[in-house]
Image (cartoon, rainbow, N blue to C red; front, side, top):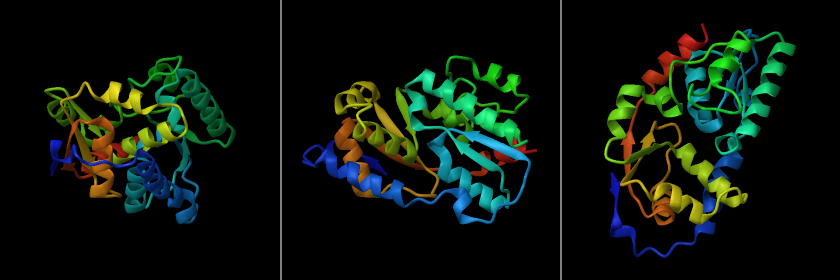
Length: 228
């Protein structure tokens, strides 16, 4: 499915987009609220970008690790990322959990992620970023050719939240995303965006949007290895 300039005549209000996506975020329960707790001995410190995919796969695998999600603002503030990492690592140590990171190796706070992992004897996937964790580095590199940006529905929700909370402006979004020839939204089927939300995101970015269905087999295998 491809959304191109056929939508350029749409005169949608960006505030309505914010309201629509916020409703989805507000109704989402936490993983710990939806299933009985069992002591697994492991704690995942995770980027919030794939929270829904993570919880979906964990339920399929009948795994119940503790999960600590970092705040979405880690993506544009390395100091916040450092604070979040330190706080969650300390919490895991205090509760006697083995630390697992669901964060890209190339994601940085004040320190390199490898240093963070080694300091707490933790474990991290062999992946540059969240997209590599989801579909694998080889496929990601192939899809990113010709100035193509890869996103998930959660990335779009995060951009919306950043605008709503004043951390980003519409101008910031267009300056950062307008460089791309195309944005490919990776649809895992866990909680896809509807056509209206996709069109609203096109109105925001003015960049061609393509929807690409992907499965979670790579992500599932990566997660099983991480939790061993």
